[in-house]
Length: 294
Image (tube, rainbow, N blue to C red; front, side, top):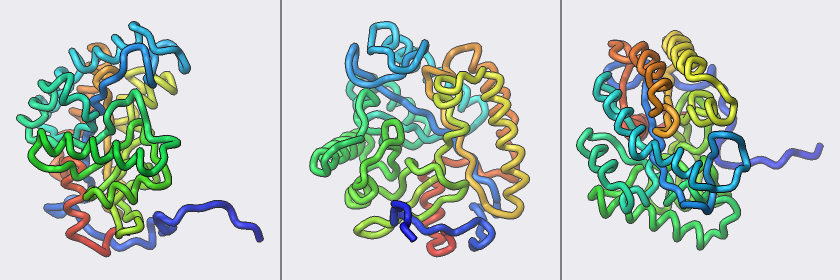
């Protein structure tokens, strides 16, 4: 029988066959919010458009995305403060150059900066390994210089990787990545120098996927967040799970969408049975559990 092309990053291990464990405090559901803080090239490179896919880069779509850095992120940070929610922030390293007030605010909250490439005007697809290694190292060193320590986590621009990305991240000292949306639990990935953790990142509860690409309304997305939370909270009685909600400041920083997001996150917040955390804290706990993680 001719077999299909496959990868060797992780084995197939179905949920019922996995070892049980708990999050800190005996909690069963880990809840985390991740923002995507991105800087783009003007009139060049890659970037979403509010009207349709494949549009050229113009002043209009640059400005639409820049709304997130000028207005949207500040509304989201206020909302997180209001609900007492910690967060991880997937941050382009060029944000330190162009909008350092944002990373200063993240630092004041005690939140986590997650490496998110240099800019979302580019991604890693098609790169030769030395070129990719150069970019990953540049991003890592930029964040370390400003934060006083290297980032523990990586989420690629567009969640794109090459065949070498997990290997290079491991070699640069990363503890986890969020580019592989195949599970509701953290999973060990194999690299050529040891393992690295995959922390769940949402495709279904990512606002850019839902609002921009699928054309959902803000109400549909907010309803999805509530339904996801309720079902995962019930399912977590049997298996420890991670719920990650991802928002882009230029999407849900808009007032009419923020109104819906506030209601959805308020539904999820302040539950005694839930561990509210940042992705790096999930990774730290999983490293302490070792072989109990699939």
